[in-house]
Length: 416
Image 1 (spheres, rainbow, N blue to C red):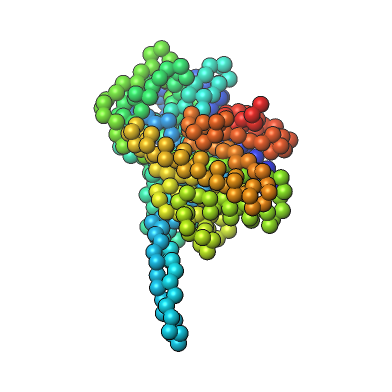
Image 2 (tube, one colour; image 1 turned 180 degrees about the vertical axis):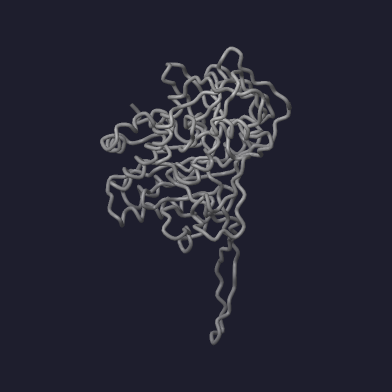
């Protein structure tokens, strides 16, 4: 239980600090004329003298940005798993033996994406966060570095990251529907807002190197200027103008993650529960226990061997599991089709896992989905959305009461 509290508490702690950064954004007199994302970043953090006017930028808006701050994630993953019957003759024995053989290749699973929920700033105004990417950005499915020589479990040494993946956050009115302008080339007009360097420094102390890299267009811990940069699109003279009407490709890795909660924390029972959970995955039909999951070195997260295009990973120490798939956010039909498939696979898995654990161990367990890439879809995976047990929440809050605000921000409930 202590390891669970520490791991989950650390995740919530990072989100608390991230929320602090956004809530303390305020008006600034440092503004730019028409420019590029690269220019605004370099000019702002270089503390150059900037004219007093609105800023005008071209780019692509998306609700999603990458985030490594999940219970279950590793870049290492298996893909292309196939099962075939094999027949072998053993020398000296006039008999053939038949069986099945699994073949698969390893590949890299892109860092999952996350849509952030509404925030309230210190001036009592509310906003939603949408991300502005360069118009050439095709999304957040990252290309793998050829033959990486360093840690294969560290996203920074595995993936190629460039300016197309580094966004600038924009604040939009929570009551205005702007879904029609996402994934299109747009022109935005707004004002620069900033947050104090002290807030950024506390956040940077908790982020991993990959996230520091991805946030480097708007978070700079050693800047001569204030440490956080964003664009406010809520002012009366702000605008979002569509330049190209056709939606353009913007793919993400979408994840939903859950923790299995049970009373007896003995190692033998946990191992049995983990084995049942793995073999209950719909895309593991008939595979057996010989090869169920594969990991890298000391990394706590394993890739679960499956067939199909949905990737499954598990953290056996926490009894936490994640399913992840690539979604086309720009194509409503494909997006809905894949979300429906994910929801169906999830419901099949959690129902079979609960039933088999009850039958084999006598334990009444709970499978609580804690996080997903978009909390608007949380009801697809549980009628009550994202959940923490009361006991786990109380123990996390007893260690760090500050995590209350991130639990609420992520819309995680205890069913109260």
